[in-house]
Image 1 (spheres, one colour):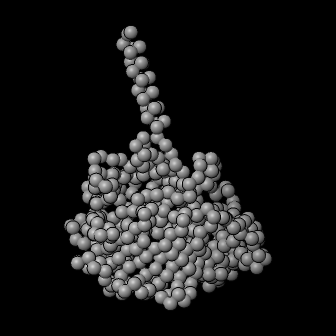
Image 2 (tube, one colour; image 1 turned 60 degrees about the vertical axis):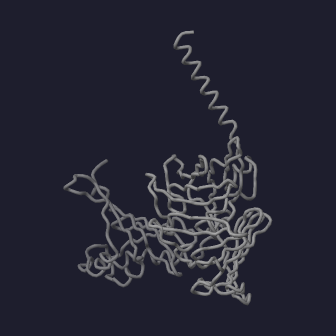
Image 3 (cartoon, rainbow, N blue to C red; image 1 turned 90 degrees about the vertical axis):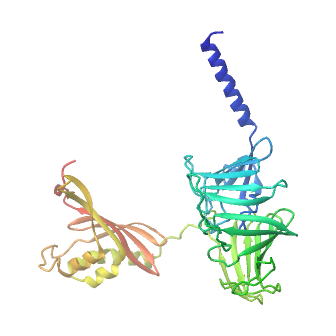
Length: 424
């Protein structure tokens, strides 16, 4: 066997090994992740299992496992946009998970394989695991493997067991104690879990690890899950386990889900279970198309669009102020003599108000009977596109409806006389 043949044989053998290794990776598909807002101590778990065929046509997560049944990657194909807690999603396309002795390391990637941060705004998470498989520590690192703090100013989590509780302490880069989050005052916490790993309660503890009220009288928040792993209820309690109001104006929150586990509604109650408010949770799964625009909207869009030209023609700065949005972006084609190239030039709303005051003061900018032709190209609910065809210009307008009032937010124009521009 010559060297070339041997090399080809070794290459084929390597390919076969790679193929074999890849074939041993198993995939599980889930519609959702279990809501894990209490602590990163909670294991990542998929809920609402589906098969590969169903996953092709819906939002989902892929959990990848090696031969030892260890989770080695999570692919995030969840594209429904309902509002989520910051620890209820991963925040990256791919989570790569590796294991080395007593450590589990997670790194995060976008679709192009580039390292990115997760929802905690860290690049790498390294968990330390004890002999029983429990996490004892979590440390955060940046893209160059230097220790860093999360968006909640936490660099490390430490965990240990005391009776039935898992005790959690958090620290910054200088080992200073940190609260549970930047907006919720729980220092040392004690956590209780069900057999399936879902959280029951999170208690605020003093230095002696005793349950105690924080400065606003909250000592714990407690969670209820249904059989599908949906987080359906959360409540706030004092040190005597009585319901109390939290800093955000509620004592009890309930959540509803559809048959596929999509979060669709929430309700809030006070400590006496008096109803406070509710809210439907919008997402892009069930999109309700806008109804055809009303005649009133169409007439108002025409009035606003033509009003811009009338304001210039009849010297009405107040009308310009009315029809143009404060965020107006009016642009056209210009020429930069220094660069010797065509450029985009823009005009502000303030400049347009000045123009309406004096630009046509000689009454020579427009014909005696101006031609202001308005064509509505499209209206969708609270946005619209309009074409203006006047004596001087051809213009495309974007309008937006804010607080019940239409206004021009974008305006793209050029002179009607194309001879003003270089021949292409």
